[in-house]
Image 1: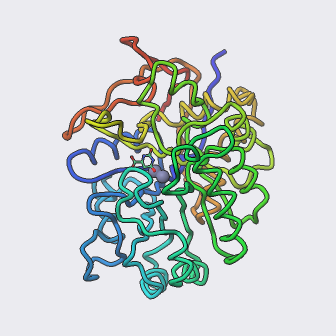
Image 2: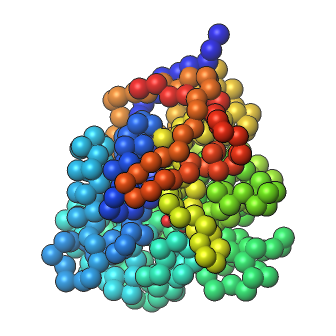
Length: 370
Ligand code: DOR
Ligand code: ZN
Ligand code: ZN
């Protein structure tokens, strides 16, 4: 008998919807795959780095970007969380005002120049000195962190003994936890065992989002054939790291690791000098997560396995951000489904599984029914 199970709509708590002509197709893909609430990242052009539209700063606002996404989705999302991009212009007063007005649930830290769209970022320690992190803690605003050290020498950036994420979780995170014991923190797109161990040893005010690609692949998949569609930041890591992530997301007592796809479309993935970082998994993420859970040894034909899965994609992140459990449902069926290129008004986007294969037709093990 074919395995199939029904579950509440889910929350993608880390996604990139960009701006302009590409946006409607991305949002449609997310709604089609059963997303109820999304946390839409602010590394747009211009970045979402002020709270209110009327603020006199040359950025987009949390208010305006949230409305833009809601409207483009025909008001079909239950909620859209837009974190404020932390820049040199962010002040504690801005955080307090945004939180009190109910406009600000989260902020995003990017390592300066460390990844796509991180040009407006500001060094981590500055936010400790200028009171911004303290204001987040005082007003119950979550700090979403791209947890990689910036400005590292190549020898440390990715090596067997250390990499940019490990350095960040060994050097920065413990100090953050000590200095702000009540701050709510999400380690975004976690990739290493060091990161997993840190989150598990930290308080329940720490959580982490985990992508499909970091559960499915290792750096060997990226390097073997130089499959650049798998190039994202943080980089996919080693088998041991992937095993730690798989164990964390599928643990019966998991309350800290939840779904955040980091779906990040790039119409021009290869550039004149290198490659844009980001994997596109819109439209196919629950199917890929289901495959990853099976790889982690979870039996999705059984109630117990289905509960672990539903906790990961809906309940744990929902509890962290205080979201209600969606009333509507969708169904996952263990039947092959084909992955198609995404045509947008800004160009074609290659979904990750298509980019990992030279076959004309590429399919996943799972399908979705709405
Ligand atoms: O791979 C990534 N892509 N990592 C990020 O942190 C940003 C994202 C993007 O916006 O393309
Ligand atoms: Zn990131
Ligand atoms: Zn991201």
